[in-house]
Image 1 (cartoon, rainbow, N blue to C red):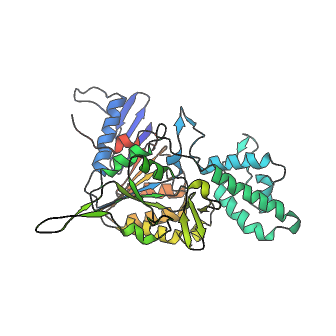
Image 2 (cartoon, helix red, strand yellow):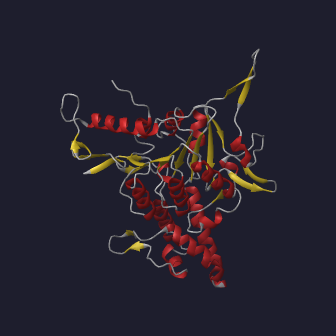
Image 3 (cartoon, one colour):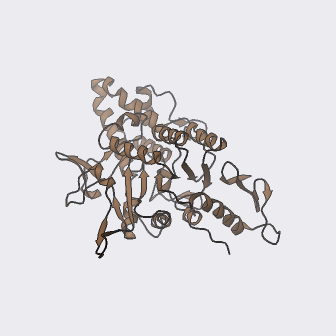
Length: 398
């Protein structure tokens, strides 16, 4: 049976056209087996009881999977790419350019332990990890012989250029559900609290979707004509005075979200004054943490240190809800922060949403064990561009 929702005391699962809750067939008020719609409504009710509480602080962590759009089990190439998909694209690009080293040649040079391709199944080797490979590639750079240095640097440049190219796409309201999701989740937050989105993605889908529906995004940049990064901006809110004979009341502006881009953005660039936000087509050298195992060390640089510190502070706050969307927990640094926060912040609840509940990495397994130990952790099999907004919307009994 395939699981759709799992918590410490509840499992929803299905097998063909049969639907179960904790292994028992789900029935309606007439004691008849429910159909697929009834099954989804039962899960929605369970999810609603988990997320629709009086949380003081709500954080949404968005990973690469949130930018992916699947149509009939095939990925729409116009939008998001997972790290593994990027590895396949890079491999083909380097193989087709004789002026560059192939990915396998680079792997041999820097002594990466696994082959790039699977000789039997013809395709990317399941053991090839792009992040580990890039770390080895960067570390080996200082040992490259002089006669190969130019080609090595050109190959490295091509790899990172390929990553930038394949993570740059525009919001399409007819295809992507980000705007609907922002609207849905915002209803869980009461002023003066602000909903916070945290993302490891470089793209601007959250900003573009928010703009589409008239939301104001506080992304750590000033509101000046030439916006510069100032982490203090996250602490500000937007209010207006209401004249009253007896007291000066404040009215908080609605539809404001915080946005922390932990790995940088296609719209950020450094100049002699600091970090500036520009239009994507104006940026020559974007500020980004590329996928590599040394992301941890890079996160101590500006502006990443301020952003990671803010994220850590948010998940330590009492009575908080963390919702992860398309985040596989493959990032050890972020996963460790979350793991420690759940251990020590007993009022932190976490709902993990992803296209599959059968992830195999160690961090995912650790989160499952926390759930089994009765920490407030639950898993929902759903995606941003699927029906996630349906499940997170408020449930009403007929």
